[in-house]
Structure formats: C-alpha cells, structure tokens
Image 1 (spheres, rainbow, N blue to C red):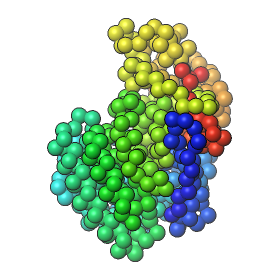
Image 2: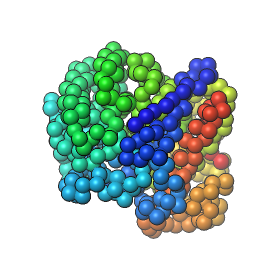
Image 3: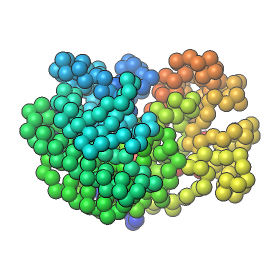
Image 4: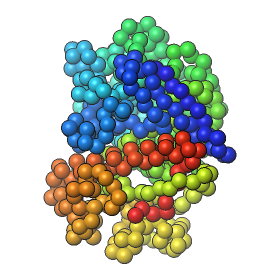
Amino acid sequence: MKFNVRSIDLPNCNMRIGKLSEIKRLPNTVLLTPLLLLYSKGGSVTHMTREVLEMVTNISSQAVQIPLSNSAQCYNGVKHFKEGISSFAGLPECLSYCSVQDPAEDTRVGYNEKTSISIWTHTGRKLLTAEKYMDMMEAFRPDMYQVLCDGDTNAESSRKRVQKAVDVSTTLFLECADRHVKSQSLKESALLAVVEGGYDLEARGQSAQMFSRHPAVQGFVIDGLHNNGTSVEQMAYHTIRPVITETLRHLPEDKLRVLHGSWRPDVVLELVHAGIDVFDSSLAYSATERGCALTFTYHACAHPPPTLECQCNGGIVENSKENGCCEKTKENCQPKEVQAKSCKPISNYEMNLNDKMYFDDLSPIMEDCQCLACTKHTRAYIHHLLNTREMLASVLLMIHNLHHYQKFFEAIRENGKKGQLLAIDSHPT
C-alpha cells in the first residue's frame, strides 16, 4: 500500500491531503484522505443491506472498519471460507481495516492482562493473546489492520496504569510485527502500529519514537485517549490537544495517522487541522441508535477558526442557567425550531426525531440534502416510525446520517485542495 500526502500551506494548520493507492488486493482503487471509514458490525454496515448501501455511496471507493470485538464470531466461518473478511462480508470492492475495539460501544475497563487483551463479544468476554489475534488476522486477511494493544487508558488513568499499557502494548507489538513479517497470508496487508501513553506526554513520545523506527509499520493509530462509546462526544478538543500535538511530533510525515472515536464534527475539524488522516463513522451510527439525524452545517474559511470551547456539556444544551453559557450562547447553540417549541436538551449537531414536536412536520430532515431519506420522506414519518419502533426508522436515519457525514468529509477534502478549511456553523439549519 502506498500513501502519498502533502500538507496544506496555511498558518497554524497542519492539515494534510493525501491518497492511498497500490493496494495489493485492489490495485485500481484510490482512497482520498482525510478518509472516513464505514463503521460496521460483523463486516456489515449497520442497518443497511448491500443494495441500500449502493444507493447511498459508491462502494468501490470506500473503506470498511471491522472492529474485532463485534466480528470475532466470524472467525471460524472466514477461516473455512478462505477468501478473507471482505468477500465473506459481501463487500469485496472495499478496503478492509481491522481494529481491536468497537468505537461505538463502551470498552469495559480493568480486564486486560499482561499477555492478553479482553474484547467483549455478544457471547461475553474473550481473551486475545498476540498469537490468537494474528491467527484471526491471517484468516481475515484485511487490507490494513492495527496490532493488538492495551488501550485501557483515559484522562483519569494513573501513571502506573499508563506505563503498564505502554509496556504491554510494546510487547504485543513486537510479537505481532514478527508474525506479520513471517506470514504469507498477510504479505499484502498493511500493518499499523498503535501509539499508547494515555495523557502522559513523555510516555507518548517514547511509544511513538519506538514504533516509528520499525520497517514493517505503514501507519499509526493514536489510541488510549478514551474508552470509546458515546462519552467521546462530550470531549472538547482542548483536552486532547497537547497529547495529539506531542504524539504527531514524533511520527513520520509520510505515514498514515488514524484516530478512532465518535468525535463531534467541530473536534473532527480540529483533528484534521492537527494532521489526522483517517476517522471512523461511529458517530453516524450512534446518532441513529438514539433516533437522531445529523444536521450540522459548515462553511469554507481561509484560516483555521478560533477554537470555541463552549461549556455546553460537550455540545449538549441544558435547560439551566447554571450550565456556564450566557443566554446569547444558548440561543446560538439551539436550532430555531427548538427555541420555539421545545425545552428538552438536544445535541447541537443533530435533530432528535423522537421529540413530539415533529409529529406533524412534513418537511425533510434537511431541505438541501439529496439522500434517499430526505428526498422521499418527512420528519413526521420518521418520528412515527420511531414511536412505533419500526426497523425502517433506523434504516432511514442511517441513510441520512452516513450520507451527511460523507458529504462533510468530501467538503473537507475539496476545500483542502483549494487551500481552504471548513468551520462548523453556530447552529444547524
């Protein structure tokens, strides 16, 4: 796999525009970065059949994230199938990327051991050693995969826990990398090292420097900032800025940089400006699961916008005078229809279609959106489907959310080529 990348020449900005090409299994495929991975469960994009996915996006230009914690049950089937996880999942045209934990689900803390990492499947806890993990990777044969790692750290982790995570991850990396180099099944797969260290800048630097010297490494995953799940949506960029800056300072410029998590759109833009290349679409899935549609809007700007650390509970507007926001800020944070009709908390970047205010709203989710959900259906209809617990509600919401999020990344790339950046508008339309 080849990664060509160039930096955008703007002050106070390290954004990169690049492309992944010469993928051994997909020689004619070129993927542009910043790249959005299609979040999946068991190799299937959630709430979508292949036919529906084809109506949403061009499948041949996509990369699918396959978290092992929700795909481990496929191991025996894939092993006997002998064609790899991409073909097994019915998406042979897509680049496949295997990660360890599920970014959309909370990762349980305190269960990793010195020589093994815990993942939680639908049947319960499974312990993975480096040997077992690489057995699974040889069966899955992904185009790209991260090494097994101990990412059980967050902002509250002790120095002892952080050091243990680094030590365990280093040992696992050496075992996985050695097996990778010797494996015939993985000779066409790209190996990504995982940089750990929690919020300890010194540990981050040591981890990044060590892995960056290994000749088999073709990219890096920055891990250990959180324990996944929807709590990531509450994280402001300023809380991770020092860690991101220090980590990237030690990584080679010509290698891919991946960051997992359901980050808010404004944080995604900050991370893009910092120099991250690949993100996952777990936010689209999480919004769908709570009956919400992504409705944030954005505009082009010539310079990085100032970071706005709004104290609104990570993008959630509370109906309280003690939430730290002035009245003007609250007004800007809320969509106009919410100001007029509802006092319920709502995300600044999404529309909560569970709210009864939409029961007779015959407008689309977003007026200018060209997705199937917006061109054929109304807010009132989706509200009805949610109230009656119809499966179609999740299908329509996922169609819109994935379409909207992909358009967001397309805009990031297109404006980046022009030497421009994006900024999130103060409130959705």
